[in-house]
Length: 151
Image (cartoon, rainbow, N blue to C red; front, side):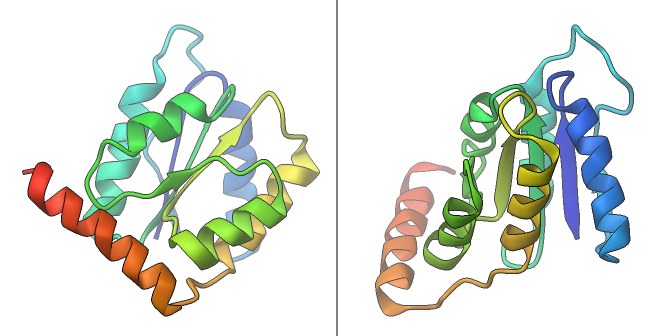
């Protein structure tokens, strides 16, 4: 399952992503915003998506969109078991999946054109975590920290 969230700055992009996911036959749930609201705030959507992903962090993914993607990934990364990234191109998106097992993707509604965003979403959804020992070791260090400090 892919969970989607966006504030006003990423609302149009989120609606476009839903079309792509439909084309690719990928199930998703739109957590909001359900309508454009120029006064809404990104943390509520980022946290809701992150919490949904965190329930099954190995199986579920999240995609967030706002103006820059920065605020969304900052908020999402406050949730235990979430590894949110905001890649600027397909190489960074692929790397984030292969090396970091990123399970939440943040996209900029302002700085990515439609073709770039589509390519990033596609490669990110279709790239597996490498399972390389060094990457597992690094993720385990993060998990241990979360267990000790995030109750």
